[in-house]
Length: 437
Image (cartoon, rainbow, N blue to C red; front, side):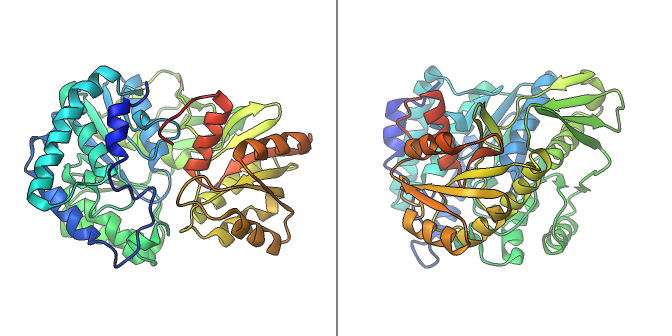
């Protein structure tokens, strides 16, 4: 269900940090966020009649959110889900039981939230951001729908994030690494502190395996605020690949198997989701079906077609690229990738190219269509300096057409570098008209 034009038109008037590059020293981002969060905490929207899960971290937030939502639904619970960014349509960001928000709900909620923002602007001399509006829009919808559980995926950080107005019954911290450094700082220490700031308003923390620095910061914050910390249970699952899907066998319930139709290894994400399910509803795992097939998170090494073999992934930082290269090498050890690549200006492009080099046969670079995308000629220069054949084309359509001409049984097509590139490829593949990409 698409976002209503009137809602999209309003969103297009707001500051959107997904479309502009924030630099330290520009508008007082922190002051704005502090004022917005304080305002929301005094509104009725932050008091929601549901159990609340917040997911923060660098990689795996969206995948963990989607898997947890599906597990809860399979366990008989209603679920509100808030994620970002969207791939095709803005409405994807707000879902009830894995279905995007419907038009009649948008019609009812939009004037209420717009009025809330207008009242805020009268007292603070500015309108909140795109992400803050979407968070409030989701909160109003979930308050009306009253799902059993609401899952919030944090945006860039934690401390000043719009989802920090909610109290988390469970805070999930996925692996923390370097990304969005203009916002969060260049060191793991500063990034981890921003994410760990969510711990203070949480009732329980479940953490993925972490680098030693984030691990210490998380543990220190949990101790300071006396918040229970549950570490990643590496004994929970055993994974193996079976032709077109991965099977995850539960050690704690030997008769249970979770099937994901995906070549992406989601062991960490699924483990965090299962641990959260059991924290919210003890013994829920034992009540799952003997064999449970869940929908795979979209644009995470997603196979769009098998002829030619075409894979799309929204990965955009070194941690994600290293993980994806490992998975692709495992599944296709004798194949090379024809890569269609584009990334944002603030990403470590050289490092991303270097990580893909061992599996890359050729790189095709379309012209940028997003205001934050890196210039195609800059990417070409970097690719060629790393000894990889590169081709510049005018559009993603042209890139895919060329890739289809040169693909062989020993190669596959990989579209990667950002969720915007992944979303554009999905629009191309499914023939969708999307007014809000």
